[in-house]
Picture 1 (cartoon, rainbow, N blue to C red):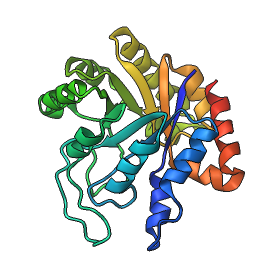
Picture 2: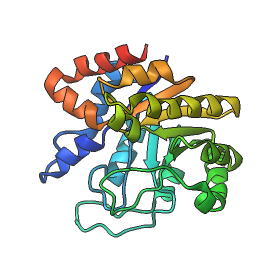
Picture 3: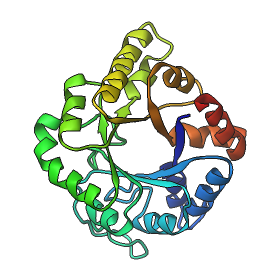
Length: 252
């Protein structure tokens, strides 16, 4: 079975739209776990637009399932613009202090609305090698956010990653169109290659209750999907517990 990790960024974004602690990120994490989710994912960006540094530490203290923290490993420390929100200490410093089960490295910037591409390891591979080595020394499993490009996937193995997370935005965009099969085939080929060279496989971005089942049934050796945006919308419509169960049915 493929594990379901719920990304709580959108819950934090709703909270941050008001000067309040409601809705609670940790309470939502607990509810997701009680409903059957296998893990929790957060992506703390330097501007703390949604998940804050404090959320990461509070989640680390209460979680009894896998904790996956995503982010750009090159993100530096940043002063907070709010007195009631702690400064951002730099992505790697968060990981050093928390040591989550998994760290997903993502090549995003503050200017991006959301993560929208994988690493170019011709450009960033050498910079990533010592970071990946440090994370593994800390006992943290390392996943790299990648496009389904064979050459790049081979490079992910060579720089020391344990897993890759395939960026599934292009699949979600092509789903239900004449391009669906051709785009999906790229992900199928990428999953086969990852398995052949000993890389674990995760996937995420724009997966939802409409497109997830086909993806899961098509790609091989899929260990984990992380879902946040669609989950949050579906939970509003269906209720959180029913929503978790609906996603789990796609993954069994």
